[in-house]
Length: 369
Image 1 (tube, helix red, strand yellow):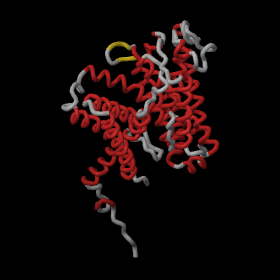
Image 2 (cartoon, rainbow, N blue to C red):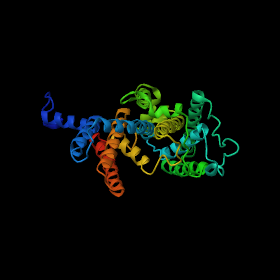
Image 3 (cartoon, one colour):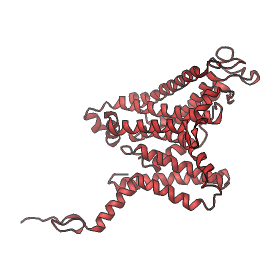
Image 4 (tube, rainbow, N blue to C red):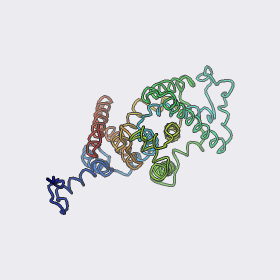
């Protein structure tokens, strides 16, 4: 006796799936893709703008964009680690340590009463500033290279600890988060470093007019480069394969440890560059620049943008859209003049919702949460 299996969705053999099944499939793809995030941003703006005075205005749009570019860079860097199935909690601390050290190198003057007891006073630092205080644009370029190098080295240490010793990424980067933050505060005794050269400040404050800033160009160039790496190179394919199934990827010949260390290095470099944009826009090196909520914004933006906490899924476009949503969210909460406790409550609820959305997306795509 021959067993006949009915086609899915109630269609008979030779028939196309029903229109309702096609709509369901379309809805599944929409929920799992970047289009959902784009619609979410538009719906949120339309819903909140009547209550947030000045939200839809040219001045506020420029303010939102100035906050977007550094955050987007950091989220894109985090994407490399999340796609791999890891997490980098140390990004905010990397921002703190690199932007503070770079500011010390470039400061044109330092208050002796404030900095005389710091570790570098009398050697690298003095009342007339840091070693690159009078070197102009060349010194700024050298200082940025040093900052990026420090970020890359510290990020590679995270990756090495995870790859070599099999340590959980959460615990490794939580430990380095505390360590790097402590070093940042120790370097300047929690003092901000101002009097930075104009060539350096121009990176975050200059541009070509209106919303077309140097920060925008830097962010878009890095995003395009990241998109190319993730979508069109063997390294990108190795990242996704490792995030989907680590053991299968290794058996298939993926150099997993090298890929992992590289992912954490990229995350740290992008965090360093994002920190440079933040510090140049604010006009000072700050050992607490990363703040209390930046890391939450980064992780929340990544997950809202469709980058799975379980690994194996994510895109640069999704990272950008997630960053846009969180910048718009923060901006609207400020315009509503809500108490900081309410702001934290709202952001906490949004991050929980993002985690639930990540689980729902996996179910839509047939994954196992």
